[in-house]
View (cartoon, one colour):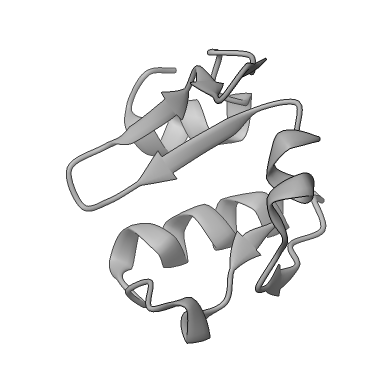
Length: 79
């Protein structure tokens, strides 16, 4: 899941890289405006900008895996 451009996010290079890498890894990408419940139900959450990808560890009382999925490690230069 990723926010749609209607959310105000930037249609930048990093966003395009993440979407392309997910597609290449065979993952479905859905762009929309999602409710908070969808975020809190996620296995892992990350933020992306031109500088880096960062895992989100916790939102409210919900903890997420702090490991970036493998397809994102390649983009971030970790793999």
